[in-house]
Image 1 (cartoon, rainbow, N blue to C red):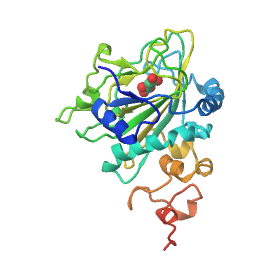
Image 2 (image 1 turned 90 degrees about the vertical axis):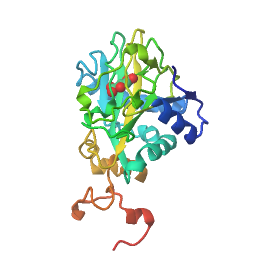
Image 3 (image 1 turned 120 degrees about the horizontal axis):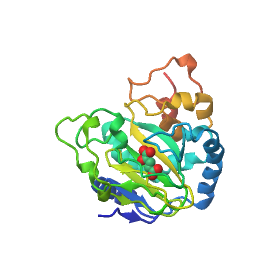
Image 4 (image 1 turned 135 degrees about the horizontal axis):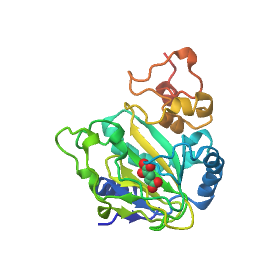
Length: 282
Ligand SMILES: O=C(O)CCC(=O)C(=O)O
């Protein structure tokens, strides 16, 4: 079984249908080289500064990782807030929340010699599942050409459907075999979308060159964010971004009850629905 792959002019409806059916989908060459090259340039100093800090059995030992990229890469906002990604997010997440937020935004550079990452589900940090409800999904942008040799992401098609109707602690779920996975080879600027419950993992890099990606997750607005965006992207930094990015970072309430704050601490990063609607504040 393979993943569906579409050209950049695909409709959101087609992408969403394939994502719901297969748990993952590829849109080729969605972002242009100028944007991708700028993101790569903005990432490089951070990779060189702290990229080795979180090397371990899961992340690998010849892979560089950086987090909370909006703190140092303004251009990445074009990918994080890409209209197609947000249309997918509306469809996957809004049935179960009032608004959604970034869970994490990471740069991943897999260097030659890295072994294949263990297959995993990104949403396993949340301890329970409700069949039919996705807590989150991921948008992985290829910042290099992704090939079988250089570590294109492994995805197990339709593995999001392998959910018990019983409540099983996610820590007891058993990963599929690598043979069940396919690799998301794709040109630079392409987008791989996969549901939080889809089994996947970074590939082994058997080539002579590194392979770089930007991986963002979008999660239900009432869940704890995987990475604390308020600490990593403080309000003075968030205030530099347009409203839709500030909302994604979490500078908004979820409905009437979640995310109250002391009004005297609010600065221009915070988005209120009275601002959005243009109505005078009560
Ligand atoms: O870099 C990749 O291809 C995927 C990485 C991944 O799935 C992860 O680290 O959670």
